[in-house]
Length: 285
Image (tube, rainbow, N blue to C red; front, side):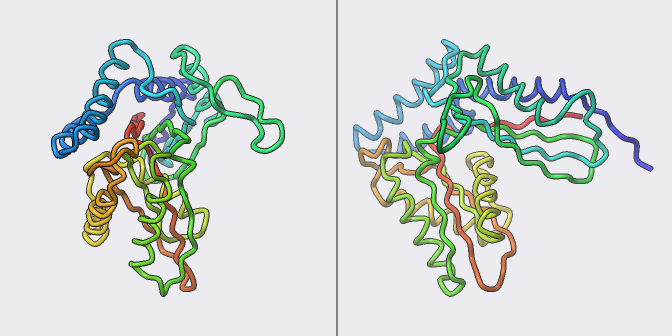
């Protein structure tokens, strides 16, 4: 019989707090490499200069311990919990929200969450609650993925219940149409998360999951990996460019997650992220 591993709620809270702070002040090394590569490809002076300014902004934010963007996002947490793990000395959800609360306080990060989406819309004043997804798997560790999702890009995301007869071309066209519709409003260059399959709601979960992939990470399924590359080229051919002012760099990556679905449908969600793609991963053992 496998031994239970105990992990305290306090340890989870601290991991969430540290993650929320670390993602606000600098691009990941891979993202910086990617931005530099695209900057070098740009011929137009304006597009090249915008990408240069984005990289300088990351340096300035890191040096001065200031967030890269005024929209410090809604926190989304994906947690994969080994079934041999027992969380002790507190509630998991409370630990997550307390970690967010403390990070946004000590980091002087903008608090953007309102308590009721329609009527009151009063600011909760601590950027909670977070969005929390959990998955139970084999093992004795917890993998915590944390993202700060800005809503300029979130607002330009879209869902379509495609007919199966629309096939690959239907998915491709919907992704391109969604990016065209977003234009400058999603703060390009973009990261595009695509979820295909499951149900209406699960396709959205898949699209969000896609945004947690690191820039440059390839889909393990060769068919989807090729589709991601093709879509990235087609999106950059749209000419929207950095900040919507024209150029070859409309998107930096396209990531697709898929799941089995019903014979009568093909749900597709496009979840757009801006170039900061603020996310990190922590493993608790």
